[in-house]
Image (tube, rainbow, N blue to C red; front, side, top):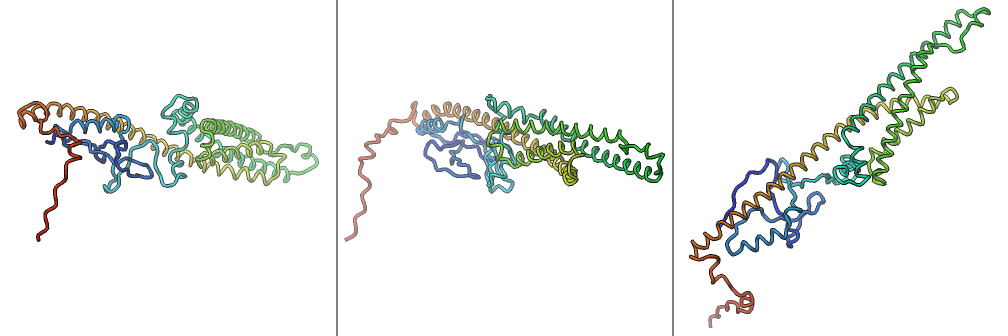
Length: 344
């Protein structure tokens, strides 16, 4: 007798199941993740088989091992809901979920708390504001340098046109608009301070994640860009004694930093979107688990209510009839059906 009830499931989710790996069922693989072939959530349970089915369900340990799944749009593939993506290429996996981002969701050890702080949305907001300011400072600094060089050229040209013995004594040893030069240097120092803050952030990520830091290409690339920029900015601060080629490299590197800033900003937006998806999936997973527990309790209550009435209606007594009690050893030793005699 079937005592199941149809329940509605969220769109896009496959049938909820109970992992039965512990009861000897075969296993399947989804994106490299070993998942147990599962027992159906609802099954027809008679009076005699209810106890065994309940023991199997208890052995499956529903509360801890339940894994919700969802299907693709075409209905051909089934995926397990997880906080960590399962990609065929581990390099792409670290692009999507850098080391430490998922670890910060739980745990109270020092490196987990540090990851939680570094990946917090408030920390990312401050870093994004600093990154935008750095890009603005670079653009403004380049504009001020060009304006200062133009004023310097104009002063030199005017001195050459009016050259004379009387004017040579009045020629300035520092041609150009000095206020533009001072403003450009102030912008350079502000940009250097922001770079130092970025370097501290990367060093904290390295301390929190250890060698896992180098598994993420984005972290490594960001660190190389930042430290190279610091070295070149310090070189530019002492530009008077530096070769002209180094100054050209420094100014060219600033354009690379602009592109790096735009890339980092867009990547942070994608990372935030990914975190929202992961949090939503984890929340939905908990809801599915609670619904599954409630349905299991309701099913057990219905079975307890229907079992006595079923026994009374079919056999006129409480519990299964005596004819159901068969000795297992007797069945093992009983002879099998005899083969039919061959015709003579």
